[in-house]
Length: 278
Image: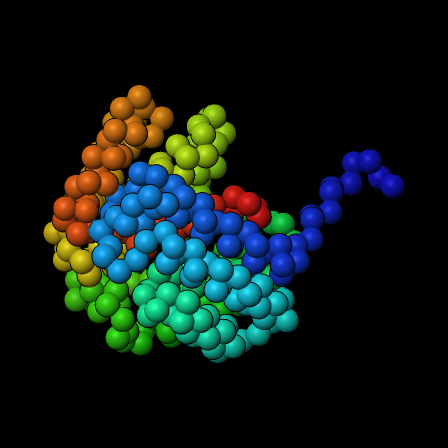
């Protein structure tokens, strides 16, 4: 054996890919304080859901992430992935009594799990993104052209924002160019996981066209959230001594304004998933 030979990348099973997705959804739920979002101890800006609702949803989705990774491994077309996601959404709604806890994560993490299944081994995030765009980019671009009847899609169209479908068609640029690098850099610098994840959430909020925010607060609500997130990062972020208090103050402000950055939360979960697998 040549001692200079490059190591063979570690293989990934669909079960490992799916388990990482479930753990990453729990990462997002457990993170606190988050602005307007559900945590283990707070409903955030939501009257219809709490941590128990989220946990029921996460449990209902365990098989979905494994299944869609298996579909990716066999080169399934986008239509098969979409049907798998629609079935998963129905299971989520049954588990939560009709409450939408993870529709965005079903779409985003589902596509990422399918891409990881297609690759079948641990690779750099850039390679995973390239696989997503190569396999399903064209279909995602066509999907992004379809008018959406969902609240977030309607808000994105009304305010001329980049929709979740358009973000996917571009290979999730906010995830791969902002969220994942911020999380990785924070951990390298020695921040705790909580601090690094908070910085990731706020860095994402600062740049993402979060249609959940636009749906709840209109364009002024979205811009307020982006400006608040930029101010948090500029002041030193979660690693600053005043960081936890600033995050808590922002959480209370978002509750008063009924704002909830759900798209940013999904992107944080995806960044945690990438950190586990890549």
